[in-house]
Image (tube, rainbow, N blue to C red; front, side, top):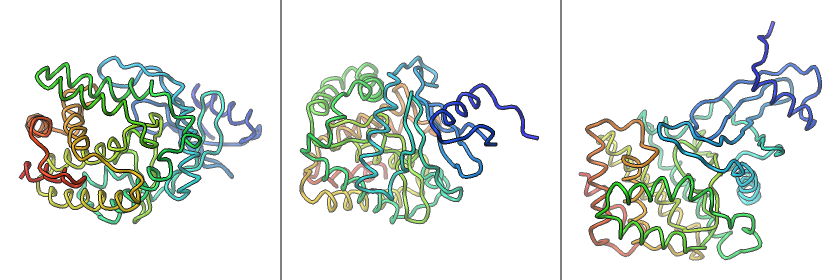
Length: 333
């Protein structure tokens, strides 16, 4: 006999039944999924149904108080639909969106989280190439297309979940860096380059061989094309600090990724190398001194990340190409 459903499970079952995705009497299992701080996420499985259902939280599950507009779940649904129309194999399909509940297809159980793979030493340049190709495709196909990106002009949630708790916190914690951080933010918020995912992190990527799904689009917006590459490079640098023996492999991932982004962007997007480096510097500092620190970094590792972030923000960029940011690995070694 199945255990009685929880209150959350009952609400989800009622919602899916009302939407015609379940019928009265269907026996389904509703189980919470872990890993996120900004949403309630549940797996719903049963005869003929295998979904992930998300609902945005008004207050994030972090140590410091952090609020955000729950309307971001609509942005995620719209962005997933747009991305799926161009790269249907790179994102889950939206099954339904209504009344604050987003239902999407669930990945096969043998797919793995790329963050977990990287932290366990599994490094595949093919995954980095695929991610670069996908990101470059999204950037090139949305560049300058106001009709295609009309739903993503509001950047309120990006400010709440990225600019303020990341860049803003860095400027407060490092007042001597405030001018360069503020210049980075000014350039970022002034850009209308293309669709930006806004959370292009290994934790939001599921992989199977060299197949990938990119998840969690709630801060998608039209903005600075350097932000997504910088976000991924930041995470690869963090993992290089955490696991110095893998730093060379992570640098290779970064090189392959950047090459694939540039190739797929086909010249429609030109990334500013200086802005890319500054974004990485800000994001590194945010992951030790912002509202969302990287949980796997040790006390001994955080000062190394802090020193690297400060150096990227205070020293001249040695290369005027987008892959000039790779010199960050030279600083580490």
